[in-house]
Length: 129
Image 1 (tube, rainbow, N blue to C red):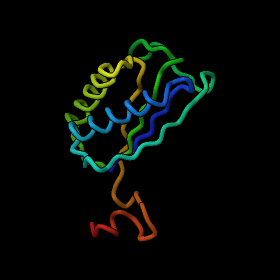
Image 2: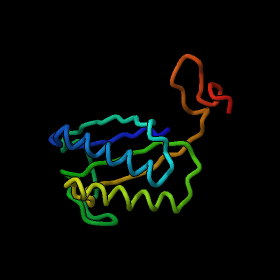
Image 3: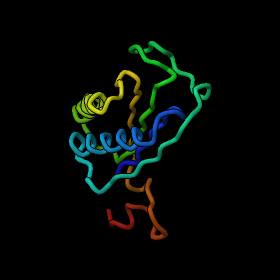
Image 4: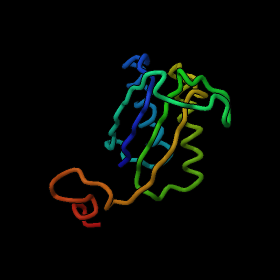
């Protein structure tokens, strides 16, 4: 049950944000075994002077056009799945016309006890895990 946060420049069109999330979700399903119904995303926008990025750290990028993709998900994916995800999402970004070098992607792992979707409590207790 990942929760995606896509941090984007203010000027990036909403349609492109939607396409990025669609590709992100499909990539997670394909490479990390995510349930196709588990699609949760928050798009946050930032002004160009609200982000500080090194323009060449581990690759060239345009700081004014860079997006940050943050995925929080249950722990358990292998290093191979994660590497496949990173390659796959960048391929998909290129496919929709977004320059993949202008993306920073990272995963944050946690456990079922760390999620709650209702008054019933954690996902762990609700699902009896």
